[in-house]
Length: 196
Image (cartoon, rainbow, N blue to C red):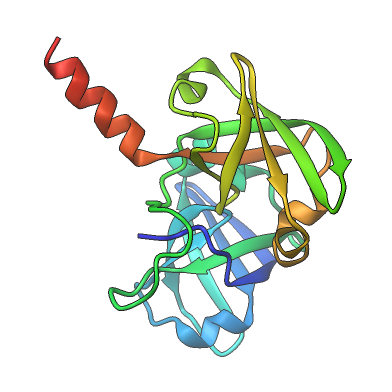
């Protein structure tokens, strides 16, 4: 489980294609906190650390994950958001996240609003049905509050801290982003549907 509070940035050192997917090598100081088999969120995708060392770790990314996430787009030199799995004794500061990307969105507009930056993301109706104004959403693994939503897109307002500490600070129009909707909304839909 994750919270969407990014703990550090990593840099993709290598992408090694295989018949079954790719193996990513990521350089990060967080590598020293990982043991083999630990979960780590990379741009919001829960991966398993392989061969962690003082400054790097590797992760195998299967084809299913490449089809459903923006990890298929990254290459050597790409920066990624990283979050270690939540410990049971830690404070839950963002929102409950699984690291299971629900789908992709595309940044369609960026505008300044005082010290904040409003980012608008287009997404399909299969995702937007779970998004509500002032609700939570994860974008590339960052827990954010939805500032507005309509039938085609959602918007979030990013504070300077988020812009500085995550890859969203360098986001550009046209960039694909990983979206994880609030898992509680999906459970509510299923429970309500079962009683119709």
